[in-house]
Length: 554
Image (cartoon, rainbow, N blue to C red; front, side, top):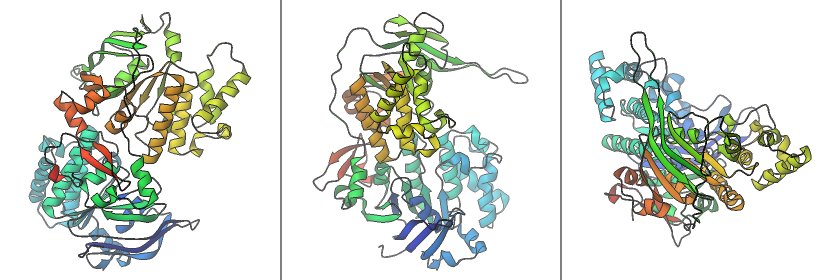
């Protein structure tokens, strides 16, 4: 426990009002002024509910049954609704996981940032405007004057999260609660946002309670870590000590699930690539306005790549770099403006000889399995749908194949009669993979297949993917912004920026000896892991110029 406490949570218990199920069990922790504390755990561990209870923001279905929450010496559980409203924003700020849903889409950025100042500060409109402009400049918005009259949808995810951070820090709160603040962002933007948050809070002496399932990011920026599992705190301690010598089996399980580099595989070069792309161009026509037409936008600029049999090629880059667009073009979901796609040495265009064979042998795993699985179909029907065009396959043989592939992905045949909403996120992703491999394709495109999963579920799915790839020998284009995952699964890495390939090579060369500054910047956002004698890990940050500013240094 900290000697001087800004926040003290004592014996907090939360339960589902209707069923009485306890979801937060006797949780106690504290945060000192200026301290950065991380709460980690899988989905359902209770970390977000415990943090929301600090501000009295539990969902209506959740009720507090016992416990005290003391902030600046006052018990927040005994404050009136009016006193709680005065506390929120002014003394305790919160940055939510998805800025698009926490920023009002019908209000301009200027109005949203002014709202808190008008409510909690006795300032003139001109004084508030000056503070807003200064803060927008500080968080890296290039044209703050123009941003005042813009709407959230006109900004990228990273820019929206910067604006959300600006709106919270304008009021100079004593405590900032950051709930999964960078989950939807790519590695570079994630690091930029978190370093901005740390810079702003340290400059004003603000304490931070950072909630995340990303252990590496929490380790980088926090002084202390609290580990939650099934509504309970199972371990807590100084960041460096806890990582190097974890005491609880659940903490060791979380650390063991972090992606690690496996030995480099040797892929035999058979001469003819399975899939090859030559000078591929994608250009989108500009929108037609009332008086003029916008200029066309080129998303891909003459892309060349090839994928060997059995090879896993990772395509990495920041949001908007064109990696998903390239994957969809290769899968035949988008028509290219120019260039050629070759399958087994033959040019493939829609309607040409061999096009059907290519589409049947090229399968795709999408980022969000829930939106790619028809909620009206059973799991068996969803997996079997891919077998409709297999010639000379009887109904019995299809049923047996479905059972076989469900067993391969770790789901028994009892799952065949269930629907997608009855499965967890990890199970739905296993179904998505089963759909892709049931036809025994020779080529697969996996677009961010584990980005929406918890760290332990992600590790299970990656192990499953590696096992299936080794067993069936399909080639794969693995699209991801998570460089840690890429380091574990890839044989070769291609780096794309602004629709152009800027660097490529085998995995070890790219990760250990990158040539391009952009690649180094991408890699500097993820740690290299070293196992410690205490059963934990040591996080070593790549290409780090100033290791003293990292919470877990050498």
